[in-house]
Structures are given as structure tokens and as C-alpha cells.
Image (cartoon, rainbow, N blue to C red; front, side, top):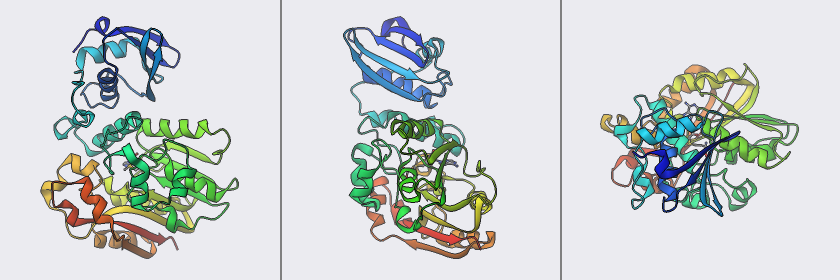
Length: 361
Ligand SMILES: C[S@@+](CC[C@H](N)C(=O)[O-])C[C@H]1O[C@@H](n2cnc3c(N)ncnc32)[C@H](O)[C@@H]1O
């Protein structure tokens, strides 16, 4: 805990709050503390709806800019009263929320985790998502199935190394199609899809984490009119903010395993697809039942592993909902990167990355 006056001068601005740090106050621990408040990781609700935390070097020293519509001087003061400032000497990964500090529900834990990632993503080495470390997001991208050309074609910051496959590789998108991305994150697959469907097509990304949506929108806006055919909507994939029969193709990358209600996700997918519409999904699936002790571990669940349904369960679920030509095919080589996500357990032996394809008759 610290007093605001010890840290520096905090000023309200139209876009949020600017913290002019006092001499000898290190930047990173303060930035990390605010990020932990913003994602609920420190246990207080002080700082809400943060869109970005940036640092500017000025002639008076470093300034931290906490941007967001509801960020006020009072909220920062409250955060400093309630929340620990992390030790500057420890690895940043150590201050990522652990099981014990996670919110009660899995959805809240997931939002907390991916909110943290969205805000801290520009700092190398955070390492807390599906992939584990976006320090080298492009290498992770290639490992899971993107080409270097695809990754080079999207705006910087859209690939956070959080995928487990490349849904675009099997989506066979055509100009003019409407595409929905379930759990769009920072927008990687939406931006790739946008180039393929062209200006007559449309891409909608849905994600329940406000900071991810903000990040994706900011990236799209930074590209001028290039992504005029893309929009990002805040919402849950269990309650899609789309009308019935409005989508040609649903893509998704490493998201549905995170949902505690996969039946509802696929029912919603079926509802919003047009007749003849298709699924082209990359996700983690289980080849055998995952033991209870791992399923109950929130960190393993938010890390995209422990929530995986078995291939048989998914096949039955999709078929019962009404999907046709269901195909769930494990991707060779995926064990290697999944092992890196869960290095100290044999959990990786239970799961695999797979492509999930089906269509709505
Ligand atoms: C592992 S990341 C994948 C992001 C993106 N698909 C990619 O490949 O970069 C999972 C994303 O799904 C979102 N998410 C998880 N569960 C969700 C749900 N039930 N509804 C909406 N979004 C969800 C998270 O907020 C996060 O942005």
C-alpha cells in the first residue's frame, strides 16, 4: 500500500488519468499495480473499464497514462490504498493472478486473465494466456499454423500468440461473406478474414473482455479505412449479440474450450448461422476425460486446457443440435506446444488442438 503523494502527482484528463511519477519511483511496479486493479486481480473494483495503460517519457520524468471513460483521480487513489505494489525485482509473470486470487466464477477468472493480457500485452514476457508468452507471438503463430505472410499482413498488436490453430486455413472464405469470430481477442483472425471477404463482406468479432474489445477497436481505427468492414462487439458467445440467420461462416480460435456451457455456445452458433452456413473452428479438445483435479483448477481452465470437452462429446453435441457433416480432426504436432503451456503436468497427454468443421443444413 502507498499514499498517492509518495508516488507522484495524479491529474484528471478527458481520456483518463495521468500520473507524473516522483523521482526514484519505478514505472513498472506502479503500472503493474494499476493493471492488476483494472482486471480485478488485486481484489478491489477501484479502477474500471481501463482501455490502455501507456508510459510517456517527459522532461519531468516518466508519466503513466491510464486511459478509460471511468478512470478518475479518486479511483487511482483508492487503488493505491487497497492494492499491493509488486516487487520490481520479481519476474512480471509472478504477479499474474494465481488460483487463490481468482474471482469465484470461471467466466470472471477468464475476463480477469484476458483483460490483464489485453492491457499488458505490449510488455514482453507477461506469459499468461493460452500460448503462454507473447514475447514471440509470431513464432507461436507459426507454430500453431499461420504463415509468416499472414502474420505480417495484420496490424501490429493484433496477434497476441493466444491461438491454438489457424481457422482461416480451412474457412475457405469468399468475397462478400459475413464472418463471425467467437472470442476475437485483439482481432488477429478478424483482420485476416476482412482481407478475404473484401469490402462487400463483413466481419464481426465478439469477445466478453472489455479491454480486448478496446484493444481490437483501437487497432482497427489506427488503420484508417482499411478495416471498415470489421466491427468488434462486447458480448458472450453463450448469448451472441447477433440476429438469427445472419452469418455465413463462424470462425474461432482457442475459445470454446474456455466456456463452461459449450451446448449453449453451439446452439447460439446454430441460431445465428444462415442455412448452409458453416463452422471453421480451431480449439483444444480432449482425447480422453480430463481428471477432476485439473478441471477444478481455474488457472488450467483459463489457460485453455482443463475446460476442453472430449471429441466424442463435441461430436454428439453438434449432431444433436442439428449440424451436419461434423468433422473434428486432431492437428498433428499440437502436443508439442500444448506441453509448453502446462510443463509440469501430464495434462498435455489428455488434450490436442483440433479443427472443428460442420454446416447448418
Ligand atoms: C485464448 S484467447 C483467444 C483470442 C483470439 N481468438 C486469438 O486467437 O488471438 C480467448 C479469448 O476469448 C475470450 N472469451 C473467453 N470466453 C468467452 C466467452 N464465454 N464469451 C466471449 N468471449 C470469451 C477471452 O476474453 C479472450 O479474448
